[in-house]
Image 1 (cartoon, rainbow, N blue to C red):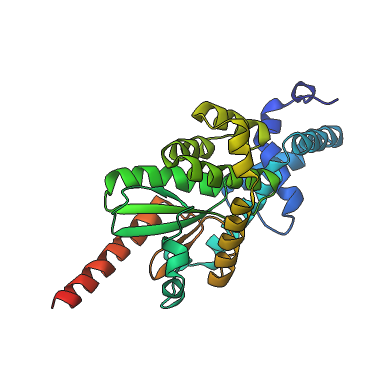
Image 2 (image 1 turned 90 degrees about the horizontal axis):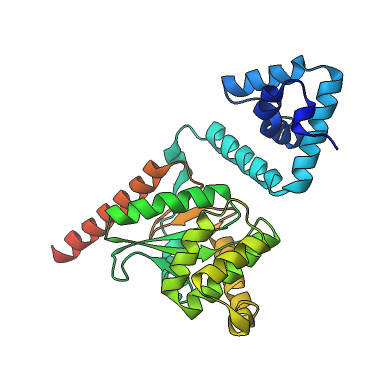
Length: 283
């Protein structure tokens, strides 16, 4: 079996391993940066034997960690978004009526995990998949945002779109929220920081937080959790949501995670909207 030591130039291998994986699935997408361009040039500089060995290593990596394929597709989606939108603000879409029409389903369902004060006036729904790298990064960014903004609450809705591990994590979180919301928030933070989402890592987190036994497994595998997933998927479809992460306030939707500043801007606009509504009602 080929090993990393088999290549004469290990630096080249390490530099291009991730890029080759992406290129295998994105042959029509040119490199986006000078660094990626140089990585492609390095591949072309390899001898035929070195290149064959490199491809064998990439294949081995994909078979060992198939989730890298999904990560590559995420990167392609993000790059496509960046190229079709003139700025991060283009990801923000005004929806003057749709969120209002679905207010109850968005903001008032008890089974959803809630982060932040229960009486916070600003509420943001995050459609989330724990297998999604952008979802995890956005989740960590939201922790700091919530710390600095006590008037904000985040409602996490499970929308597993990246396969069985994502569905297992979603079912686990829905069951945990039903059983003990405080412990569920701890479990949420752990899953955000899981390098590799699989049944073993989920079960380790569940045990560490203190959810175990047949009772918890019964809730996780039960019809109520299944129905919650169906309701979230139906809601996402009604709103035109096609991926994760996706953020919804009372009148805006933000697709993807263009950066922490985009979330801060979303919160600021919602805060201003609420203030204007309050001023109008009092005037």
